[in-house]
Amino acid sequence: MFNLKQISRWVLAAASLSLAVQAEEPKDVAPASQAVTPEQPVTTAPATGQTASPEELKAALQERVKRYWAARQARDVRTLYELESAAQPGGWLKLEHAMSLQGLPVRSVKIDEVQVEGEKGMTQISAEVMIGTIGWTRQTTKDPWVLLDGQWYHETFR
Image (tube, rainbow, N blue to C red; front, side):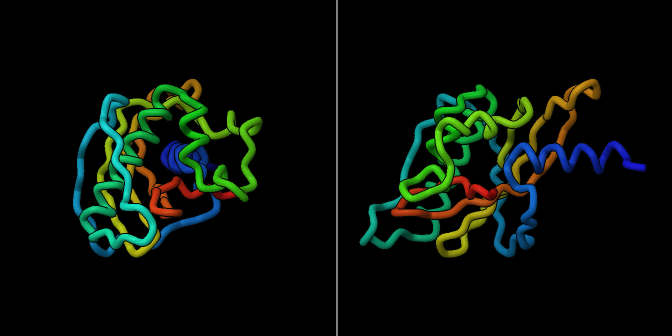
């Protein structure tokens, strides 16, 4: 029989499009513990050809993560779609299928950890998730990101 904790973890993982992939444990993690709000400014990594420092890459990733999770809270499918790696040119994700990106309703999102290793990023996110009749439940999940053409995108899995 399933227990509530296992079901809740699975639901949040499904909502963040990380169904089949479990990331490695972060090796060099700095806590961010910042609430995500839509009013936060958005920064980008330096353009291709320029070398960004690890601190610049991490800051750029953190800003994109804030934007993504603010859109998840607001149920802003257009922004979610634009921040998905598979929605970029040559990707398999089409706008007409973007509704599946919004997942379960979330609120009180916090970025707990941000890690960058080359062109891969991993964040740990905690949030309250609305789970049917169970109600709002606090959950934590790993959220993978990838650097494409100098911009961070949420890593989309089929």
